[in-house]
Length: 117
Image (cartoon, rainbow, N blue to C red; front, side, top):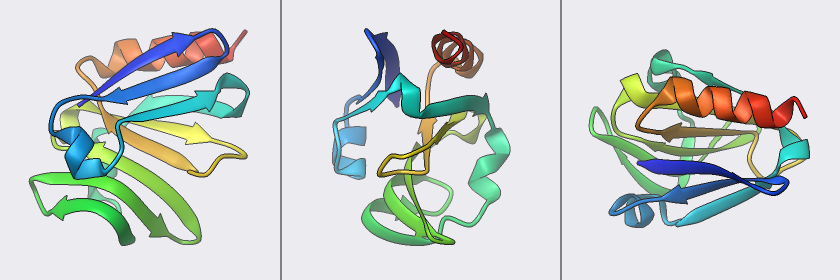
């Protein structure tokens, strides 16, 4: 699971617990100027993940780490599709971050508010 916060002009995502190990990452910091938006999307886990270059993938259990699909690099950290949030990025290492959070609607609202300023 991920914890999402806004710190000054950055979007900060901290991975908690075992997710750090599964995703091979503990934290992502993205300038808000590079965040295009966020949506709650439980159906994202039905999409093609592409090729895993680091992390963990066990179908129906966990998708975590870096994946490449259609020329894009994606970061995943999802176990429960109902709690998935997709964050669209521009001019970053990753094109999208697909993360699991406790309350998807609150996280989407937080990111959308921060991006509108």
